[in-house]
Length: 224
Image 1 (tube, helix red, strand yellow):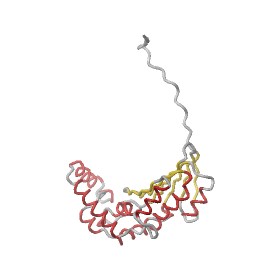
Image 2: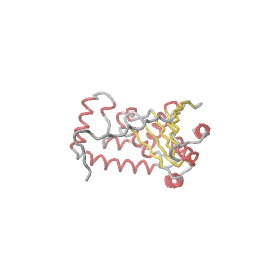
Image 3: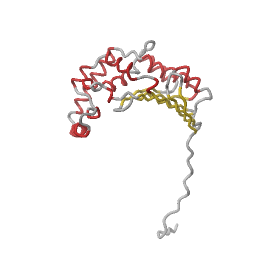
Image 4: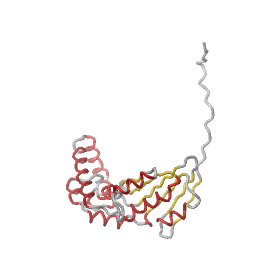
């Protein structure tokens, strides 16, 4: 039988020291800021492309525009359908998605390290050449209406909505969620105009993290 001395706290070993990965920063000729976080522990790479393009830049009557732009962006480009994009990113063991917040829009991608070139090519195609098909915009609008109707039946959502209106009165933060009317006003032309106005290289930062090769900067310049 093991005897335990309960008069003394258990002893734990010292925590191992943590060393931050090597970080580098540079700017591409088009003004895109790049942050490189090198980490060779796993054969994976992650890309985060953030734009100063959040919902606070929406017109008041088009609340929900940034979110719609982000949601529909990966759903087809000038040369690829939504299915072709999905098949291509799945084929390299990766993923691509876009999200909007009040302050920014983030396009993210992940893949195996050996497929970095293909990942960057797909990500650049989605960001630069998104077609925003009419049927995808309409589908997103209908889905968002159903989501909003469910939210409007939740007391917590209504309380948060009212709190934002009181705390941020007069500021775009006061309208962080769309209305049924603002969703109806959205169309493909508004989405494209928002993309063209806000998604510019000199208003963005790209973070590349993981087990990337020595020619990673060359690949970034090739695609972005």
